[in-house]
Image (cartoon, rainbow, N blue to C red):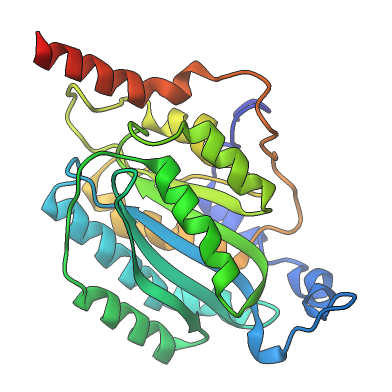
Length: 283
């Protein structure tokens, strides 16, 4: 079990089995219009979810396919359909963003309602038809700051707003990841993570990327991360993480990441790696 300053150790199947208990009774009143506001039934969803996936050159072509196929398989899985149907509104809203450097983000799939097998298959088929692309550098902070405003431009009202970030490296371009995370958390958005640790040791690889995601990337009530340590784990890990994000966990309130009072040295590790690489190339 991790300490209070880090994310809880994840028992995926235990969390998934318990996260739906009591959700309808507790949360259905929250779907009703608040004071001075209106929320039409057709606009209500259980979660607004941005899937933000890394397409930097550190991801090889096989990993890009595994990543995208994993999300397409997860969204259409029977487990995901069951989780959606057990939610208060039986609907979620999903968008899909690809990101790399600080100026390299693209909304690949705009906000789409998933409320059953047909809409899930349609989303997955359209996603798989999109061309693959890759770009330079890794800016998790850029992915966060691009994704957060997307919630303001969709017509849906969700019980939760979640950015799901998957990637295989630390932030090495753009503003510090801690600053971006603080901005996103102030908006009430939860950040979950899928760190990919299947690289061979190298100059730009981070052996403790899962710890980096725990301490520097994820945050908000109920936030969690699921590390991938082999190619064979891609599909199962993405599916379980998506189910957990759809269902939520309303019985317990894991840590909330507060505004940082001091810099965490680990959170600048990617920038230091990049600077060391530039220094080596100049010499």
